Image 1 (spheres, rainbow, N blue to C red):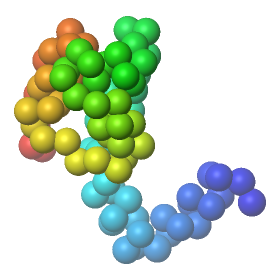
Image 2: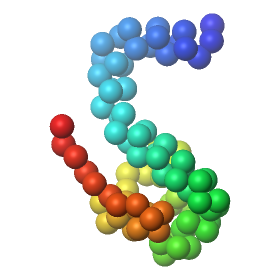
Image 3: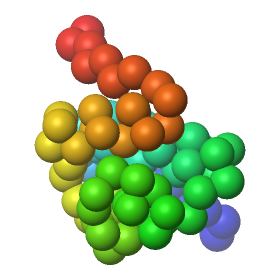
Length: 89
């Protein structure tokens, strides 16, 4: 069984699907930060140094094990030459 088949099987459970959907914004943020950091050619440590944080904080954020504050996201956005917008839909 491949990854897609396992994912489809798990998501056929309504409770799992609901939790998965609830986590989507966190994964979107994580993926965007990784993409922007790598486009800038920055390591996790370099990015952390630029925002006055530790590499471990960036690592936890990118792995999904850290729930950043809005202020932290704003600092990241500024260093990555982006703006941070939070939208409720």
